[in-house]
Length: 207
Image (tube, rainbow, N blue to C red; front, side, top):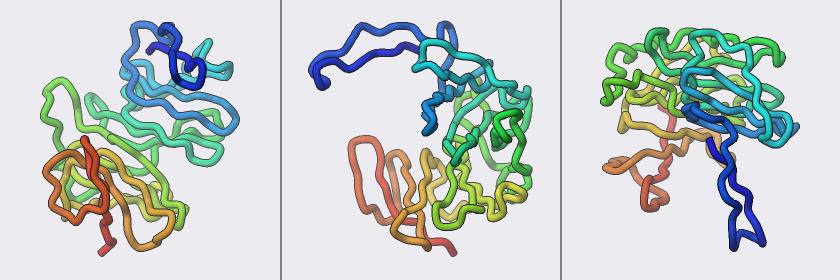
């Protein structure tokens, strides 16, 4: 991972400086206290407390060594993993001391059909988030397999597959409690409320 700095209001940028050498970076998340969390493939979750100058590894379990998504969750962090050799899972940074697995995603009825088209990459949680209206509800965008939902802080999970299954991002609409905007790649069939060159955003109503 390389770091660049914005100069003179973005007109020019500094030369890149390597911050985390020889490491595959999958996601970044900055906490309100200034801590930056880095998801990696192979090294788990790293964190920096000094503006990205130094990184230290958190005590990441083997099942979370391949991180695919991070989400700042209040004063904690949610992380989504990649399968192989361990099952795909969602974890929470418990009391900033240990990563705790949240339930069993394989309990979802459609989990046997989850897949990823690249042979060297396993099924993974592409994005994880918490509902701002119902704090006990978690969402996990499965690659590729739709959406996994937990109604009870990760104790149990179920999935929704009545939509395009290639979900890249899922966030609850802060203005509406009954629907869910999602981002997906090309070829969307649901009603779109916004689009740009790489994705569309639309509402998905809970049924």
